[in-house]
Image (tube, rainbow, N blue to C red; front, side):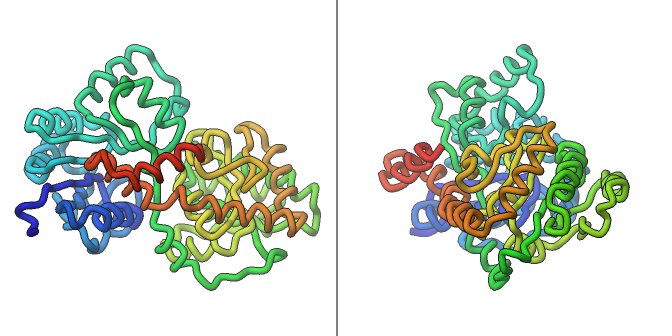
Length: 389
C-alpha cells in the first residue's frame, strides 16, 4: 500500500525539540503500516525555548511550515493558513499547541468542518492557576471542536472532563519522552552513591521556585554539615543573578554549582549521575525532566504542583512529595534521600520500574486507540496506565 492510499495522521507542534521528534517517531512506528504520519512543526524557533533546530524524523514525514522563523514572529492568521493547507486532507490531527492560540482555535473548527478528526494534546490541569468560571465556560465552547484529548495523567484528565469532555475519549500518555534515546545519551555514567549530588534541571524563572530550593538546601546543609552533598542547578534564565546572590548570602557559593544552559547530552549525563532530581515548582503542568530522571532510576523530590507526580512519583516509594512553601520539607527529603544507601537503592529500583509510564510508546498507545478504537493490545496497556494512576 502506498502513501496515496493510506489515511493521513498528523501531529502538530509549535516547534520541535528532541522529545517532539521522539513522539512523532513512536507514533509513526506504530501506525506506519496503516497510515502516513506527518510530523508538522510551525516554525524552527520560539521566544520561549532555546532548543536547537530539530533534525530529520524516522518513519514520519516532517514538515516545517515556516523554516528559519520564530513561532512568535509569524502572525496568527499566517500560521492558520499554513497549518490548514498542510493538514486539510488528514484523517486525524493531534494538536500539541495551546488551544488558546488564535490560529489553533480557527484551525480546530476549520478542520472539523472539513471532516477531519481533531484531538487535543495537553498537559493543562485545574490547579495550574486561579480559574474563572466565565472563562472556563468560554474555553469549553472553544474545545467543542475536538473529538477527544490525550493528556498527561489524572489531574489533566479530570480537567478535561470539567471542560466538557464527558462523552469524548480522554486518554493518558501525552507527556512522554523516548527513554531509549535518553538512556543512550547518559549511558556509562556509573557514579558511586557517596559521590552523587542533588540536581535541578530547568529554566530559572519564578514558577520553578528556586529561591525556596536554595532555602531548603541551606536547611539541609546546616543539618548535615560536612556530609552535605552538592546541589547542581542546570539551566539559565532571568533569575540567575538573584539566585547566585541568595547562595552567597547563605554561604553556599562553594556548594551550589550553576552550570548554565547545557545541551541534551550533557543534561542526560548529569541526571544519570544524580542522587535525586529536585523540582519544587509552584506551577508545573508536567515536568518532563522527571521522565528523564526515572529513565536512569534516579528518584525525584517534587512539589505537589508538578503534574508528572500523578503518574511517575509515588511518595516514599520512588521519591518524595513536598508541598510548596516548605523549605524544611525539602531539607527533610534531602536528608532522607542522602543518608542511607540501602534506602536510596530501594527508591532507585522503584523509579526504574515506573519509568515505562513516561515513554513515548504510551503516546503511541493513545493515538492508536483514537485512530483505531478496537485495538485490544493498546487498550490493555492504556488500562495498565490508568490503574497505575
